[in-house]
Structures are given as structure tokens and as C-alpha cells.
Image (cartoon, rainbow, N blue to C red; front, side):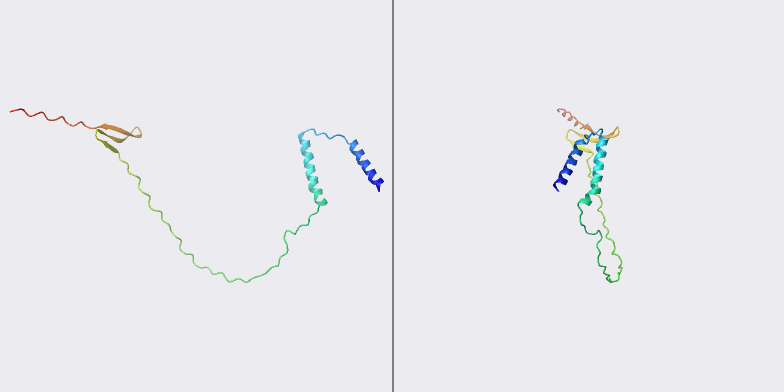
Length: 132
């Protein structure tokens, strides 16, 4: 038995020593080598380590149950939701009054512009009455 083990070891050493060095020329060669190794593992792997699995569709007992007949009732009336009326937009004043004038919102050159309008000065006081 020792001779058989020794001869197998010697043959393995001779094969290892006489094998040429590995040479990976291009990246495609490396990719092909890795892909072939992956395929080899997929084919040989299950043979080396078998796994016991349960069947995908286990047998089950079939039981028939008689069900009550289906009775269709009229559907209830759908609920109708009415949205409230939208609130009116806020009313902004077009005129802002000050004691010495006012601003008016006007449409000019395709845009709204606030325009300052000065107040009319009060009339001058009446002349004094002539002395008698």
C-alpha cells in the first residue's frame, strides 16, 4: 500500500514539474478560463455533494366541500361627495388713500402699475373782508 501511495505522489510531482507555466495573454483568455471553471463547478459540484431536497410539488389530499349557493344582492347606492364651492378670491383695493395723495392701481403697457396721484391742494383762504 505504501508503494502505491508513493508512486501516485511521484507521478503527481512529475506532472506538476513538467507542466508548462500558466500564461494569460489577454483579458478575454482570463474570462474564458473563469467561465469554463464556473461551468465545470456547476456540472461536477452536485455529483460531489448530493443534497436531498423535498419535491417541488408534494402530494396533497384533495377534499371537496359543498358550498352554499351564492346570492347576489343589489349594490347599495354609491355615496356622492360634493366639494364645497371655492371661496371667492380676496378683494384687493385698487386705491390706497393718504392725506396728501393716493396710489391707484392701473393697467399700463401690459402690466399693473401703482401710480401716485398727489392730492389737490386746498383752495386759498378767502381775502379778508374790507374794513368799513
